[in-house]
Length: 370
Image 1 (cartoon, rainbow, N blue to C red):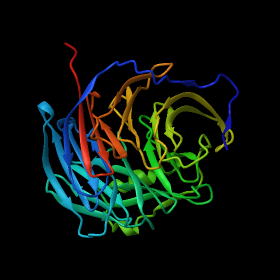
Image 2 (cartoon, one colour):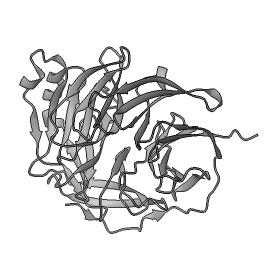
Image 3 (cartoon, rainbow, N blue to C red):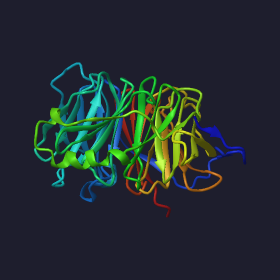
């Protein structure tokens, strides 16, 4: 278990708005009656940077942000299971570059949707319970990880349909896994967090031959020698409650619990003893009213900023790479009162989307300073 390093106190950002950027609401869509749990821009393919997807109920919808606040519906998929409730969606692609959407939720089956043919390409069965988050490897975008209520994280190949690795067991999570993320540059590393209040960093280095083998496997996916990764290389207890979102910021980590703040910290590994090490808490980004679980933050492509909603329908945008942290903007609208489950920042951060418990999607655009 990581110990806290003695040293300087973390730097806490001030909520006195600096008004660095001004945003205004340019659109509001009522998608349906059901909560929308996820919204995500496509950062995988530069042709589609202004395309985003949402999930709510048993529906996955693809939209495009156009000029002047316009949002165009491109595609919609209704799952054959009418009781499915999707909680998460991620963009991925086949090795030939075809854009895929990978969605999961209540029933534990992962649907891989081919956006070229507008059909379900594959279904991944394996998780024993609901899926809380799916993320795509930015350097190899046919690899995705899924975090589940069954206390495991799984690595999948969307090209061949193989479950390559299962991160669970003796050193695994002891409750639902709520969030997972690939390291931006170290292809072997992932981080996961959950209801056991911990964040775990895992390495695939010694299992990488299996990852490579998954691309050339010609037998049935079920015959692949899926391996268990039982022990993380690092374990941190930063929070005292559920941890429902974690994202790498270079080699640092951003994570949040239900105590109205995002925390930036540095894991300091001990090379000799895996799993051990210390944690340096660097900064805290306050987010008032963010005290219910399953609220996730998002970043622009270059991780300059993070946007997060709260239970009152407000959005806070923090500059990530300044010390002390700078509040870029606080967004609120008299009609936006419902909890915001997730935000999506566009490639350059000029558009911010939020998806809400009341089935609405909001679009905010940066106002050009005259």
